[in-house]
Amino acid sequence: MNKQLQQIIHIPPNPPVSPTHQPTEKVFAALIEPKHANTIIRRLNQIAPLQNLQHLKRIQKKQLQGGKPELYVVLCLASENETQSDRMPLDVEDIVNSYHLTPFITEVNKYAALSKEEWEEQCKLWPTSYHPPTYNNTGITGFSEEDSKAVFNFMKSTVELAKSGDHLIVNAAMIVDPLVGQIIASACDEVCSWHTGTSKAKTETCDFKQLEGFTSHVDANITAKDITFLSNGSANNLQQCYKAVSCLNPWWFAQQSFHSSPCYCHPLRHASIVAIEASAARDRHLFPGFGHNEKSYGVDCNSSSSGSLAKRQRVDLENVKNSGEQDANTEGSNSLGRPYLCTGYDIYLIWEPCAMCAMALVHQRIRRIFYALPNPETGALGSVHRLQGEKSLNHHYAVFRVVMPELEFPVER
Picture 1 (tube, rainbow, N blue to C red):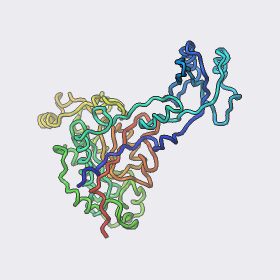
Picture 2 (picture 1 turned 30 degrees about the vertical axis):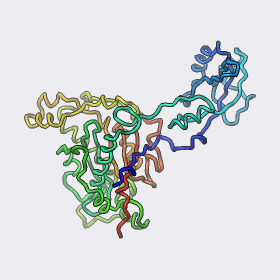
Picture 3 (picture 1 turned 90 degrees about the vertical axis):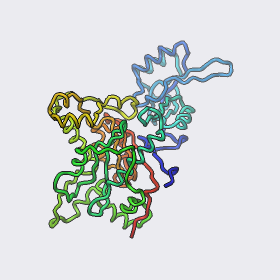
Picture 4 (picture 1 turned 45 degrees about the vertical axis):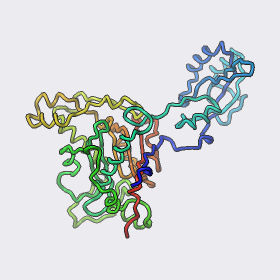
């Protein structure tokens, strides 16, 4: 296996654009006297706040050859069809008249920079702020060698889960606590399940299985050969192999006939949803005395918050097991705080989730999503939509694609 070809690729909230071709927006600006700068800016922030341009600095400073600086200020937004003779808001016109300003129209960048290269290009038009994204547990951009090793091994274990008993490829999901390297829950697609008894995901979760030392017991070559991932086979072969992956083919179950088969069908039981259900079952098992009205530890945590994981109440599994053996309802077992949904957890998926699964992970407060393969038809985190960049949502996670060359084997004929 060539480790140099393994990659963890960040999927940004907005589609990538060339640094020299970033979207712009027109604004009214004017040259002002430096002694009036503070007064004008305070007034403009009250009457014409730049609500959708928070990355934009209101003042642009230019240094002349004689050493005297020139200050330009953004007055307000200008529509695409406006000219200098068109009217501005009356309050802004009052400022223009009071300080004898000469407004003009200029262009500024519409969105915040996602890279240093984008930021440098933006500042050529008008100064903006740049805040490098933070991804890993310590709040440092990128992944350490140890973090990367953990990510690749958790993804290998997720690949192993994707093998179904009926020889069809299905999606698999694994929810992980990255602080302690502990698997919280794991599941596969159960849209059409031949297991009519207890869910496999729930049973595995109740056993509290853990990935020891971030290692996987799966042989990568055998796994890739058995489950026939990726792209060198014919389109027909790929379609046949992947037909049971719920996020790729959400209506596949409706095309099947199961009158003589001991199975059940549920169109919503995608791997992510089943894993979430298993995680909730685990919490109920560990904290039997905590009802819906009890205080839950941990609050909404965005992926950009470096200290967010500290807000989760962590569980020592050995202590929980010991107290459970004595009395599952004693005060000792209830003294541990029940975690708030999946705050601070990561989830590993074989395929990029659909919109339903991606939104469910928003509601669960997942911190990071890792997937191995794109979903070109219904993918909600990069291929078709980018839910992680939807500003109206009250939680945002970081999204990564895990590229592992050992999974890129041709489909066997």
